[in-house]
Amino acid sequence: MYSFLEKELLEKIREKGVRKIFSANEPLIREGQFISSFPLIIKGMIRISRTNDDGNELLLYYLKENEVCAMSLTCCMAKLTSNVMAVAEEETEALMLPVSLLDKWMPEYPSWRQFVMQTFQMRFRELVETIDSIAFLKLDERLVKYFIDRYQKSGNPTYSSTHQELALQLNTSREVVSRLLKKLEKDGKIELSRNFIDFSGLV
Image 1 (cartoon, one colour):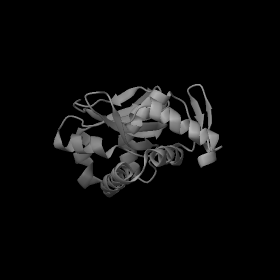
Image 2 (image 1 turned 30 degrees about the horizontal axis):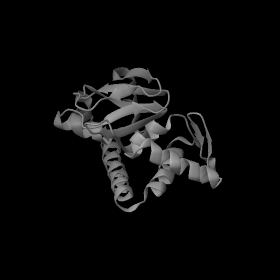
Image 3 (image 1 turned 90 degrees about the horizontal axis):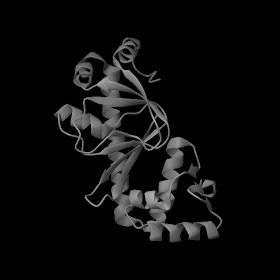
């Protein structure tokens, strides 16, 4: 777990962190919430997204083990409410750390400072990719990219949820997603069953 950090820092993380297990689809952070602690992912995967007043969701990026949410860090550092939602995609184990430690550790531990800066850089690149996808890709291309991105994060070539949930994450309608999925199935790229998609043919 986070073996790239200094030994002394790892001991402090174990000492100060509260280990929690989140069930699939359980929120860790809600939009508009003041963040008192931020998660270091030990196992599992978290979906970071934004929603509008109609409940439509825009996927921003995924987090896996040995990662932390850059958007949460920025809210912690600025003492602002969260502008994103974090939801466990699957059963996820995380260490919840008090936000006061974020600034405290920056000057004390070079590895922590580098980790935070690399996190900002990586998430910024993923946000740019998300914007590019919305601006330049057709919806069928975005759907394929969605599955490939999930696989790259989780290593799992399956999706267990409803077409409606998938449509919300792509900010479109269930009917459009269902039609695109049927086309991918007809082309032999995915296999559909009730609330389950095997997209191993895409990866």
